[in-house]
Length: 355
Ligand SMILES: [Zn+2]
Image (tube, rainbow, N blue to C red; front, side, top):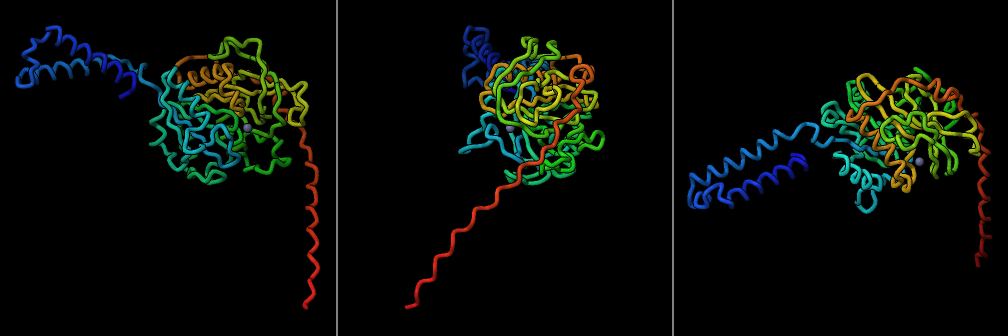
């Protein structure tokens, strides 16, 4: 039974007990040694509880969301468990869940992914890295290939999917872990199935800096207050391989950003898209702890989650061509400087005399 349902049921039980004390049921009838009357009182109480339970509409039930944060690649500090405590992001999400009626399941166990496991959730929320079918950095159990397919199928069949930040640094096409020239190429229909479902892939990021997000669609849930865009300090992702059918919500303004990764026209940084019967929402934000507590990020995320859950509607007509016409122009690949030669080993101590 949900928390809200429990609360409502408890209130009803208190009302029934109060009514009993006020004489709605003769006091004698509640006496422990009056078995038939006691049974009747219990039946009345249970009937009232049942009626209340049935009266609570499905809309009042909390939505179940799986927050999955396995790191097969780099492990971000905001999703790391320290001393057995929930991660920083999990604490924030629990607070947002309490406000919005979302009940989170927090997991890093990829081996659980199957159609049966996923169907209990109203949405999946990824903050992951790397090839999740490999144990990788955090050594948590990986998905099977079938588990990955179950994820793609879940979305196509009508599920909600939310990705923050490194959800786009996950399942790289051709497993391009080395960030070589291939990493800077769009693969289009040949991109990894997960990338094609998400709607973009991480290339690389420069140093953390204050940069501007331009708002494309202030009508989208959560963006109503940010028609003029916003800026803050973050580790901004450079992304690629956007399919033409995404609905761009926020665009990364690249002008003035110094690093090589941003030497490109503005490109989508937050979007929504229909995938089969499902709904996918992604935002590149979410690296820093102070981003997770930033009301702007929380507004954008909350709106995106509500939309992905199907609680609020929005027009997600594809708009890539008008919102970010240069989106498929990626930054140039720059050969990294050659690694410094290893320091010379200290000379061996001279052998001591044998005498
Ligand atoms: Zn990051």
